[in-house]
Image (cartoon, rainbow, N blue to C red; front, side, top):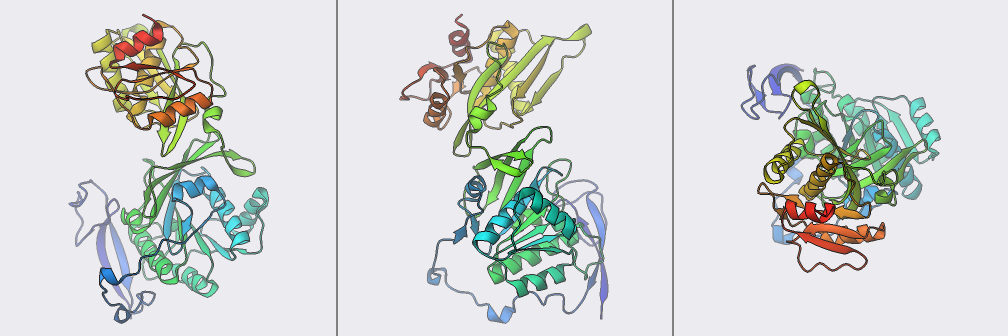
Length: 454
């Protein structure tokens, strides 16, 4: 016997309402509530563990044990995960279409299949022949890797229970559907039910499951926020199709830090780890060119050297000056422009200003503020920064340069790449790294004076 229930669900936060309304009272967004028809059945909770077998226990009686992990075969990915994949965990991997999510998972699946045993790769978007073509291209064919083209949630669950694999990959969560729900695959209800189903399955069978999630135009995961809340870790696969660099960034991790990133190079044979990302990022750096400066930034616990470029030119025909950034936060960029105008007297009101991070990287930490300011000043003056110099520092509204963290790691990375001098904040006291000269500056004025020898 079935019963159809009509409910209204917010696509953004997943809140449910008895009737349609224009604005969600939970997240405050407009026009995000859609109608869903749910067909309820008596046996639709058969996959959940019987509640009678579960009893509360005192937290002091629980025997704590460190999570058992196994390697993905890709050290860069293990770094982001905190050391490897944890048994019984549920993960979520997202990224733009064509960025390389399926390629990365195929490489992981093949390694785990060769080293640990059976791995199940479930695809709701590709046929079995397409999966084999990818495996042949990546040269990762192995009999322990079992592929399955299916989208029915119940069928997938039955195969997982029967097969008992060492790892399950679901590509993608938006294509999976539950028959009890009449809504289309990818809807809020379907995604929420599928995520809850795989969460219970992973915990009860102690099998790690990785879900692939689609992203919206804004770069967020499609579907309700409960999808990200339910999983143990969330990884974003970043990069641009025009650039071979790929970055895996952890934004949630119950088993490790979220400050780590993995850096890869996309080749015709799959994703290859970048052993020296700083050297690769600076390999095409132009020497003695104005508007260019090197900044050591921190990506997790790893220092990276990136090139910041700026171009300043007079606005044509007296129009509104253009402001454009690629790879840096536009709000901080605007603040730095205001500081240069107010504190240094740079006439930027009628100048077009463009700032770019070479190599397609996206920098979010404030420690690159001084690099942005120096690159703009270099372009305005048309004077090149010494190619063996680098700058580090956060800029305040008064023009002061504030201290940054991990200054020793940044300076050692500069020494490794052959840099001879660095301008750092005066607040980073007692810094001593052999092989590099240091100039400490309290303000942006002092930093520019040291760099351009005013």
